Length: 573
Figure 1: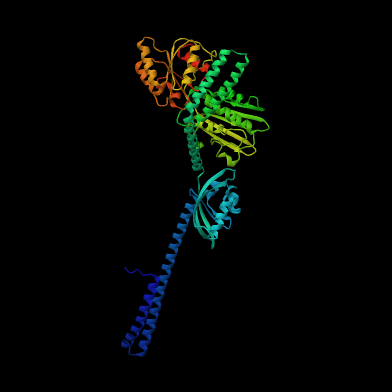
Figure 2 (figure 1 turned 90 degrees about the vertical axis):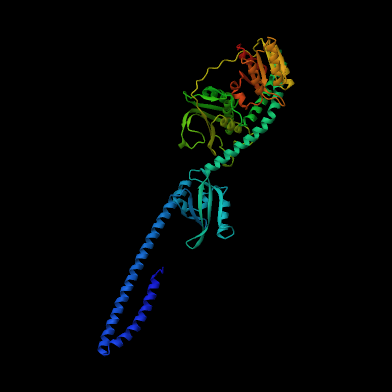
């Protein structure tokens, strides 16, 4: 179908008008022979032509005005819709030109904390992180000169009005604004995504270190067990007061420090679980913090709620977290000062934007008024082996991070240069009741009965056997689980079953305690066994009763720990 536009209508009208004029003149000459009649008819024809032309022009004008009004309405509606989209966009939208911002949408004000007027009044580099200013400005100017691709996408940091660092991803292209080159930019706030990525990378680093540490832990802890057990046993044989006993005590202390270092390394592994029990943090906080500051010039101020909820935790590991955080706070105040340690109950909800599930938590915080942590270091302080101290392994905060993570909590840091740092730990609360603990008995507890020691290291079997014999027990030894099962079967057949088994969890190239306990239970459902291992992060060490063991003793152990474990099993503690 032919579409008649105003231009086509005018052209058609002119053509028809010319045709009508010539044809009408011929018709008039034929109709009116009289000159007067011809004149009257000509005048009438002229007025008729003027009337038709005026009518047609008036119609065209009305149609053009209507179309213009409709177009203006559509443009206004389109502009209103575009403005609505820009004002309510999830991304910040800005136009940059000659080092200034020519346009920003409300989302940019939300991201930065500045008003739209403040953003438009200053060079845009003023709102960038100092380390990113030159890079962003150079890229902008190169695009203005046509030296880089018109379309772009990259990330950088903004500095919000409150001093907070905001990571953004910008996507955009070169355009024009008021006839001059400019860039239109769409900025997404990726701070949370960046933090989550860093958390994942940090966890992967810890996992890698954990795998490495776990690979050497078994052999190293076996060696430490032989050293520590021999030294502690020899010291008890000498008695207190002699020079040799004092020297052995120092050797024992050194062995214990080596044991703690091994445990710190093993803590990096996320494959296992802490050996938990239900505790109230208050006493552990005071004890660990006081011990950490003993001999230093730093004081400690406590603000601990009197009604702390109980938590399920590995007391030794959480004590290590408190110890490390308090020591770090003390070191941050070179001229001395006061470390503030606080604890209270909190209910975490989704609105608080914490990377933990909603629920009840016990919050522990350690703060100092030291120099603070520089911005460039904050993302790395939980990395293994990262340290800015001249003396230090760089393991302290990494250990804290991994321990808290393995307990189902989180650790966060807030720091300002010159104003100090605040470390906050959230640990899940529990509804379980706290079971009162027992006081430690004498250093060595004698006993009687038959004990079977299973370990793949001869030196561990020898020293454990020597200690157990000195306590009054009868001792047999096995190099792996298969031999232990056979010895236990034989003892039952002879009517002299073993009272207790101490079994190594992992035996290289043979049956370990994990498999042996199943066969032993099938032989004797009442078998009493203690699991022992240098792999502190193995789930069996945390939940030993679920696997059929009655107690646990972690390598390396000393003579006192071994005697107390036997006494607990036999009810003599």
